[in-house]
Length: 336
Image 1 (cartoon, rainbow, N blue to C red):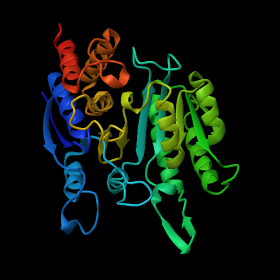
Image 2 (image 1 turned 60 degrees about the horizontal axis):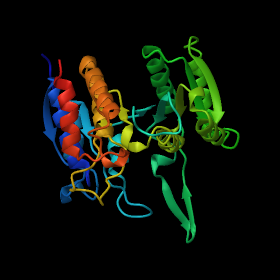
Image 3 (image 1 turned 90 degrees about the horizontal axis):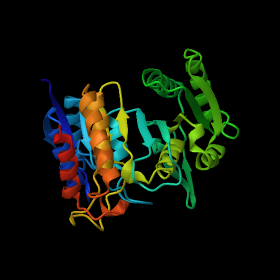
């Protein structure tokens, strides 16, 4: 039996609680995992002001796979985002966000089954900002043919391998004719090599309206960084929110699987955080590691617990705590 070495970054706030519960459930599948647990944020002066823990970066590079809990990011000031720093430093250029209904979780739509693929390394997220004069700030939007082409190849290859039939490229090239225009030009060139996959384009504001009116018209969305960030959270709202959707950040050398919800400091340490998002991300991790059978077992067990509704957490209308929920999933996993 293959033994996998995985970096575990528990995160902050409720992160350590949901990470511990997820770890127990993953181990209950019988998959052999050797965990290397390490903090994502640095408290070491030798990191020269960098917020990301360089030891965590080195661990992920060494193990090639990581599972990460939520990390806090200051708004309008404060330290740079650890989440963004990890993705950029490790060149995890593809953000994969499956969005699908979970049985028993109230939502406005049924039978939602979307995949959003977001370019993860450039666009306005390059963080190239400066103050021109007091009261005037300039932020640079960077789009390159290289990054646009490789994210398009990732999306179309994913569609081909997973039986997806249609991809919409999302843009604002009617206004940003050069930057988003280059993104579209690059995607179109890749799309031409995949004639079996239907290719369409949609302006981002129209796409936001269309997805909340009828999400079932979409199969996969391919987006630059900023639009991808906005629309992936918007799509999560169609099925119950960020607490019930997974996320993966994938590069050519490494992959990091994480919960994208917040750190919820108001409930941290109280024992009733919902580990579903991180657990589903753990399922994506198992699939990435070649443990598809175990990943399927986790998804089936999770859905059964939600359908029964006896051991779900407060955020989805239940009364169970984190550990009770984890115990329920493990109990289903152990059933013959």
